[in-house]
Amino acid sequence: MLTDYHLHLRPDELSATADEYFTPANAERYRTMAGERGIAELGVSEHVHRFRQALAVWHHPFWRENAVDDLDAYCGFVTEQTDLRLGLEADFIVGREDRMASLIDAYPWDYVVGSVHFLSELAVDHPGWDVWERKASPETVWRRYFETLGEAARSGMFDILAHPDLVKVWGPQRPRPAGDLRRFYERAMDGIAGSQIAIELSTAGLRKPARELYPAPDFLRMCLEAGCPVALSSDAHTPAEVGDRYDQALGLLDELGVQELSVFEGRRRRLEPIGAT
Image (cartoon, rainbow, N blue to C red; front, side):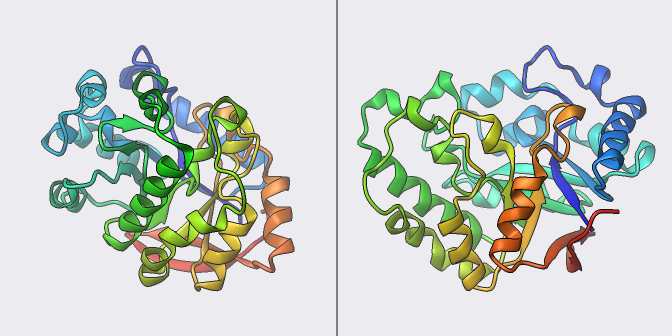
């Protein structure tokens, strides 16, 4: 089986409305592309910050600007009008863990994807809230990112840890620490190993300035050695991106001896052998 659990039915722009993109016809476009690429298991995981209910968790200006949709309507659409698994991409916000957990627990997810985008008020991947504007050293940013990632895993709120080294997203456009990066990965490993969370292998980084899979092979190898399973995803925001460049991801999994993928239903995980339909 092949999966793609990190899908968004619309682009990130505010002009991309729920009315336009949360439709059976649009969901079928994703399903059609998945079928062409041999992917049997699909799930949608829209960003939590696009929903008004998320403002009960955090009032960051970026969230206030984006929180225009209704979470109940989204869940109803996915479960009643599509055959997609119901997911959510939920940010880990330090100090807001209880509020986020309460929001997550109120809905019947098949899985929850946990992401670290923000370090305090600034983001590692949003240019309007760029953490690098503060002139922080790359060592400081990377250390804080991976420490926060470990906390996200340890929180127990999430089933899948999304794009686990997102801090590299800008590639050569932002500074990167010198030397062996495993010293940063290690800072996340206690939380990851203790939680046994599924680690997302995402092809999205190949479409970004990083031009790399998330996570880097050394980081993925450390997670596998800790006993964590893998969840395969593309982080598609358009139908054409579903299963994008899976050949590279599957090549890495083969190289590392991974033969099974995580599959979710009702927040229960099982492992299925890798293979296209």
